[in-house]
Image 1 (cartoon, one colour):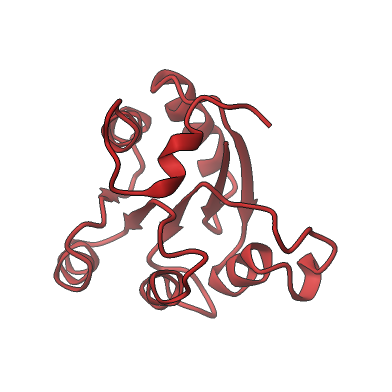
Image 2 (cartoon, rainbow, N blue to C red; image 1 turned 90 degrees about the horizontal axis):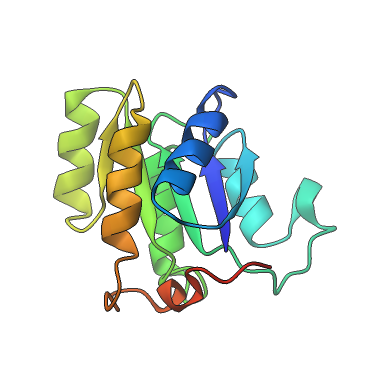
Amino acid sequence: MNVLLVEEEARSAPLVRRALRLAGVRAHLDSVFDGVEAVEFVFAMGVYSWRDPKARVDAMIVDLQSPRLSGLELVKILRFHPRTRPVPLIAIAGTPDEERIAAERFADLPVVRKPISWMDLARIFREMWREGDTRHETRAAMGSAR
């Protein structure tokens, strides 16, 4: 399983790795700085044109305060494109207002508040990939290592 973290703070990656392990999710974690890099990574463009355009991202964790392209705009792009629409997303909110706006625009988008708690993330991962949950096609990839 491949998970993409969209977060400018490098110290978040180890927390996400710990949460994935705690939730029992075997995953490779890639990390990009902002929403623009996320689009380039997912669609194998720009600095990530070396990637296989068919390479899959199975889940994404998106900071709503992402520079250059906001997390909300990134979520809108990902939900619009047929290839990324089924990808499970988790939002990271820095303020209560961001959390409220995300909930209003995307009712099914799980939100974690900063500072990020690996325990909260682990709980969300377990809920997203619990056995029998079929809201997203990519959840079938749960537990398969690449």
